[in-house]
Image 1 (cartoon, rainbow, N blue to C red):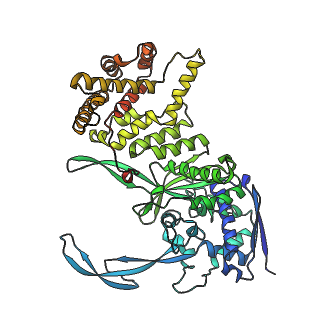
Image 2 (cartoon, one colour):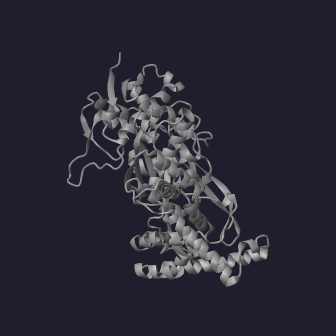
Image 3 (cartoon, rainbow, N blue to C red):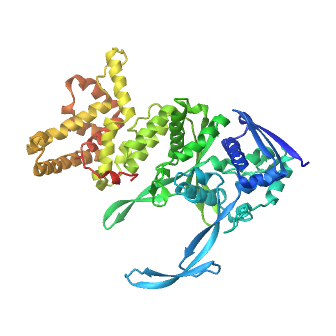
Amino acid sequence: MTETIELHYDLAELPSAQHRAGLAGLKLMVDYLQDEPWFEDREDAEIELETEDYDATLRCNLEGLIALFDLTYTAIPEERFSDKKREKFDRTEEVTVTDKKGKAKTITRYFYSVEIPEGAFLPKLDPSHNNGQGVWIKLWREMLWQIVRGVPATRNSYKHRLKRHGVSERPSFSKDAEKVWKDLVKPSKTVNQSGNYYLGAMASTAENVPTRDCAKYQFLLHFWPFVTQVYCPQFYSVIKKRGKQEIKRKFKGYALVVPDVANLIEFCDVFPSVLEDRETEKYGYRPREAVIDLPEEGALDMLRLLRDRIRREAGDPQLSQYLLGVELFHAEKVGNSGVKLRSLSYVEPIESQVDLYSQIRQNYWCLWFRKQRLINLLRSSDDSNVKPWTEFDALLSRIPRAWLKDPYFNHDARVLFEEDPTTLEEKKLVMTAKTTKDSNTSKIRSCADILYQICQSYVLSRLESKHGLTWQNCKGNPKLESDFDSKKEKIVNTAFLAVRARTEKQAFIDYFVSTLYPYVRKEEFADFATDLFENTDEIRALTLLALSSQYPRQSKNNSEKEKS
């Protein structure tokens, strides 16, 4: 009879989110392994994981551990090609290509194979999967190869378990499993920690103190990638192209969302369905749903996916029953062998925040506008003074003028006033205070509501007084409608640039009083004057946004409505 070890884990005693995610990954891996036909052929292999809501006990022998590692570290070949001659290649093919001058020529294309991680059960949970391939599993494999196993020397466990074409037998390798087995025989033994297992870890600290972990805890770190969701943060910069300023998008690394599991059984029951619920539409070769504006958005999106699945399956339980939160790593491959950890953050499962995120994700279209709105959403959980329009004055003061005519931007400015739940909630609070005669406020409407009306009244009044145009008179006549929109755009643009140019407090107040204050309702004069002088930055931000919302509406085909 072979020796068996028994390891007990309690979620509360595990030292990090990665360890708790690793325990969830271990459960899913053991469950999947026991259903694999090839595992039944390994008669001497024994492995089982007895799980409760908050703890688990693993029992296995060496053969069972080897089988688990064979599943975890199986690699598959992927064929690639190069038009440049290679020393090692599998085959060649003569192909016809067109050069830059439009001339056709025949070249030799060299095809070669590389090993990539198989991913155990993950390919089957990719909703776009086809013969082991799919947009989501491709993204996961790229992340693992560039971040977790970014250094080629750390991929040996995969190289020794490479599946061969035409060979159905599962490849097996034992040296790495035997090494881990020796450590697990003494589960409390301390072992060296490594970034190969614990993301962000160094072999030693800056003071040259070795980083250590308990052997049985480090064992769990082999499995956290299997419950980690991967996203692609996009960043933008302004470039000049043919005399015009344009947005250039660039992807920087990966956002790894590691679930901090609160209930082992409930999380593992719902997680496979969460993966199957992901959208399959592509953005280039990436899943569109994985393209995000902020690394932290990845955390919110995973919480959204989990919440939506929970509501469908179990009604309306709290996210906190499943997760303590999510840990987020923004990491990027640097050079041939380096990985740079750009940021590390933790997002708690706040239901209201996830609900707001879902609406922002759906309603806002403009890349840089949506990004600032998301920043404000995340900041508002720690600071109640952060509003949807916070910092928009600074943002709108530095964008190129050409961007003001972007229909996505104009659309988003209107959404912020007309549909944004936080803006609407502030209006509701003011109305509630009014109807209950709250002694602490005499406001009739919120500042956002007032400024939206002021700017709208100003623009329409100028159109009528200066050009004799009203929408009622122009509606239905294409020529008049075009003239109306053209004149309206000029009025809005002039006012917007005038406000944007007045960055000093008194300069803005003087302009507002002389130009826009006549459109303030008489009953709101006193209260609004106080806000204008005491909360000038907020009023300026709202004025810029309210003017932006008045640009003529432009329709775009729904197929073009994308993450811009």
